[in-house]
Length: 559
Ligand code: F6P
Image (cartoon, rainbow, N blue to C red; front, side, top):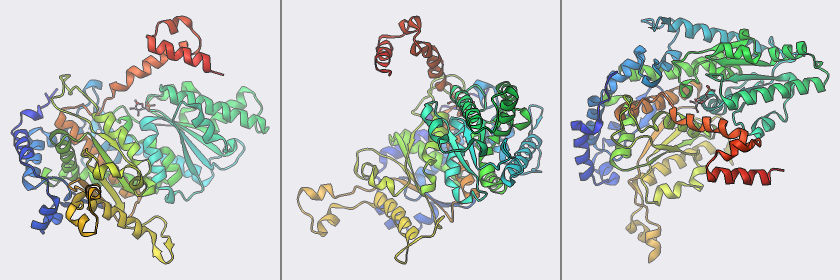
């Protein structure tokens, strides 16, 4: 195992500390004195235009950050990942989500741990394509011969957030009359609510679980099966016999998992199951068979476009020097804000209503990956890790939390994401509404960067205490990511960009970004506490005083 390099012992860290101490942020002055700043700090990454110029860095700081990446071995670690080395040390696994989007016939072929990775990836993609085509054409039907109208993906975490986010983002591409829904929470409201208006005869469930052991997903899958049987029996479509029920499951349930034997044990025919591999982490799995619901809803062509977008960014990461490697630069900026300027959180603000779930998706990607206190060799981390990601689409956020970003006491770096063309080109009294929307995106990044001085406020006639209240300090850092339109390819590029930003930060901090032991304890305790909820006095007595009191409250208030 390679020992992680302690970033705080590198010469670059020392340089950055000195640069931080000398830093007087002055975006107004920097832009005024440097006509080339916007051009020099902007990059093209496949179809994305990425403007880093409104960040609190100058050329020297950026150069020191790049040296930090060099001195912590970021390029080597990327290469090790792409080669299939077992960089997921705690689970002794390769990390090969990038292999999921290699095009057919990619050269040189990728063989890892005795597996012909390319051949296996293409074979699952072909099986998914054939199945999606059958469902979309109506060749695959429910048990009564009706075409599928709704696909319900049952999964949680990485088996839900990616497909759910992309389904909402690419809704205009769902042109086959099939829509997707996503059930994740074990709160019974979720399944009940999302099936309430569905017809069992036209509903297909995709049970998506890497491990096929996840409590929420298996519980919801059983509830869905009961819902299906009850609905079909009530309408007389099937009798209540075992054979009819098995047949109903065969027509209305498929699965996606790395554990196909567990799929069979659940009662789903493995002929209708789509596999992937342990080298795909849950939060990196949307481009594996976990994307089956998307392929059905959006079509195989759109799904492959999405993969092509991911791959374009993978190619950039693998072949671009660190100084112009966009995901690396963005990861380095996050390190700068987290470790040198004391930022604790990071806002992601898409100017696209379709990206309403993007921040939630990024929360799992970034926080499950880098929310760690130990390094990949088991030693403690030497600096702060893992920013808190959050956000909402603009302009909604402008009327909610932007106040704090503009005038609050905290430093919150923000990524703005926008698209030149709208999904729906509506006009308001002849005026392009999307143009107005984009004016807000530009206005916000400008206001955050350049603020409004007391003199400017006074020049507008404001006096007294109101002047301070109406002053904007500026120097609030933003990155702008702009693309022509929110297409499948562009969305793939965006997701891959954030995957590699996350990895860059993980390498600098010495973290294994691909395990998630921190979610285990809660899962174990829930299983221990469940009997107490169900009335087992011994299990209740074994709890701590606070948990016992909460159990008492539950017992006295449960109707
Ligand atoms: O929350 C922990 C986790 O393991 C995630 O990493 C994963 O995406 C999710 O649970 C769901 O796991 P599975 O796909 O195995 O059901």
